[in-house]
Image: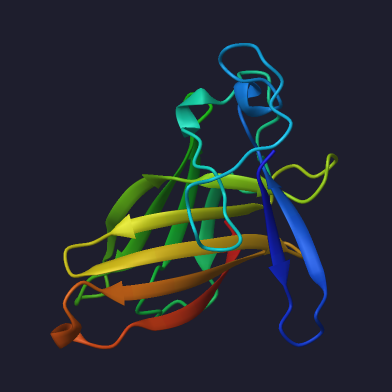
Length: 175
């Protein structure tokens, strides 16, 4: 099973999260042989094998904690003003909304997300998603902590003339 080890840079404490995976990667390969060790071609550490979200089992418990509308705690945010998680045939999708120049809500994009959980009793309270906008790529990593959705956004400009890459963190409450 794919694992993600996160190390707190201040305390040194490590937390291991596992990705919600389809049945075929839970120890069984396509040929029916046992798959005791999995590797990835990705050279970065830690690594995760990409699993198509369309392969989720119908009977896998849904990440009900994430599903629904989330509103930004800062109404005038220049980033995302609203996030919505949808269950589309056992594939969780995320719709992101922002504000235009006049302050009107506009849909920015809809993408599939990877859901993670910490242990066997967890219901999938962490996710990652990637947006590819015309001038910027955004990688989102989020989790629910004490009822608040926290999203870390890593923004990378496609053309360095447009600006510097930057990081931001947004906080959302359930609507």
